[in-house]
Amino acid sequence: MQVFRGFPPAKQYIALTIGNFDGVHRGHQAMLGRLLEAAEDLALPPTVLTFDPHPREFFAPHAAPARLSTLRDKLEQFAARGVARLHIARFDARLARLEPEEFVDRIMVDALRTRWVLVGEDFRFGRGRAGNLALLRKAARTFSVEALPAVRNGEERISSSAIRAALAGGDVEAAAQLLGRPYTMSGHVAHGEKRGRSLGFPTANLILRRTPPLSGIFAVRIRGLGASPRVGAASVGVRPTIHPAGRPVLEVFVFDFDEAIYGRRVSVEFLHKLRDEERYPDLDSLARQIGRDVAQAREYFSTLK
Image (cartoon, rainbow, N blue to C red; front, top):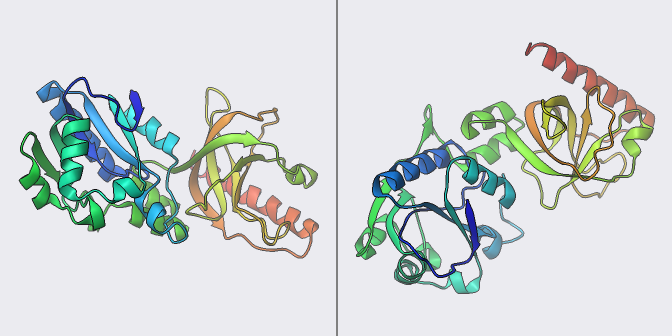
């Protein structure tokens, strides 16, 4: 997959879809599947245009929703699903000021050389989100437009917002239904305070640069530590017993594993929530609770066999 920051001079026409694709959930996957079908029929490279940062992070950084996926995670999903070209547009004041017609002419036609585009039926674009599907069809003088109806899970419309709500409520199983896979957080293992080791439960620490969409203690599956995935228990939160005003961190205790893995990139799949994060009166009380969490997680995995 070719990845472009911005819009270098285009050398060929493309089939395009546009969106934030946060989480690359089942609705997004349906769009990518249809994009690849049309691109093959039209002999055009299947292309995605996405934005970084998320527009809501630009307009209201302190009120923006938690991201479901990092930019790297999205790129990996796009590549795995057959996207040939990815354009990452920096969402800034200049892009936000573009009128819908300017967005079509400058970005879709002049910069990307679009011949076919797929959007969701509720697609909005341009200054003040003034552009909609009807305006896009009217402005599309040199390319064709297709709209994909919302994908549903039973009666529920699949959306990034619905997934965030499920994760915030601790229902990682429901989130997995909407995503089409377990909710996953990825990153490089970093050095921590070695507090877990002193408590008898050494952890792999992943620094979270943004507020995560979930918190608590979970049974997890870990990929990136060998040919086969491993299982364990993980904590996502601020560690109130140790740092009452700390920043969120992901700590993973990998069962039956003792290797130096600093710097290794791993993916942590959240399979089942065990409990909420709590503050304990002392470290001995915390260690006893971690022991109970580990036992409960092991019991959970024993039921999957």
